[in-house]
Image 1 (cartoon, one colour):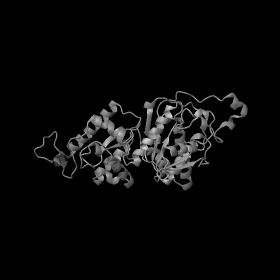
Image 2 (cartoon, helix red, strand yellow):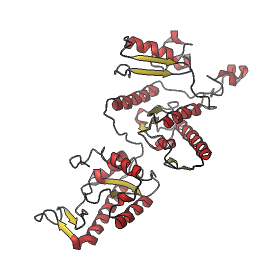
Image 3 (cartoon, helix red, strand yellow):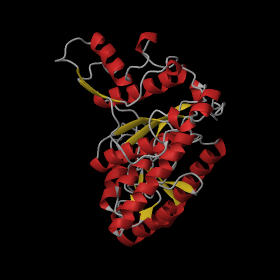
Image 4 (cartoon, one colour):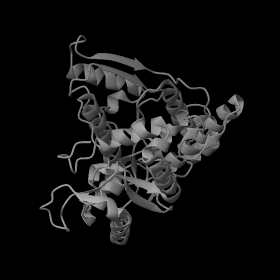
Length: 382
């Protein structure tokens, strides 16, 4: 799909060969290709799609780039770590084996990839690599932000640096049994390379195709300057939406009552219910401009069910707070925060006059960049 869509350079890296067992899920291989390198077979097919070498440059590589691997997940983790250190955008596919439901396929950050054994193994390996590097440099590792000074391990929580396609379906089949031939010949002799797992998960041919097309969609939209914001698999219940909406209304009403003596109406003809009202210091104290349905969009799509400041996720108490107190509570001016971040934000508002002034500059830029992507309330551009 990348070649058909005009991508001008594709490097194909794969140390594996086409086997009889992989024909059910390989996009282009046929029986005559068994025993040939997968990278070579795919390059030949892509060249037939686009014969002009000036339009499409192909670079098939039949070798492994990483030697720091003793399990399947280690290869992927080592590659991700290398590109994260170099600041290269990574799109990766997690496990398709033992799964069949196409409605459970998602695009997300690596931390959110649930019910995926490969994703769990890669996360653990990346954390090990990050901790080893942090110890060597005298730094420390922290959840949600990688190495303490904002290191490469933060890619695990940042879909803009590392996006993964995974299936949240529970694995419906186990590893295939070792055959009599493998037992007799020595199981260790049947891996693709030394140290790799011999027993494999059964794969329904449609699943790798669906997940691969999802990856291609992410890549093509980003290359075309039209990136989309993936919706996570975590659902926001009606009770949670209602709670956040009511808490926001109560906080805004208390703020207005506290500042009421200094409140002035933007439009003297406006009614008490729908008029824009401001305190003498410029703080907006009018009605909120979202409804309960907007809460789900803000939580699941805009903020990915995690605190915009610290990266903490569902499981902690999260609330919606206005980012710029001079503007109304519109979707592109509401930020999801955990209790600790919200408390500091409110304290800084009282102390400094603006809660944003107490934040790290990088955090502030990241939050404001995310707010600019909000598709609701676009008429009130941030």
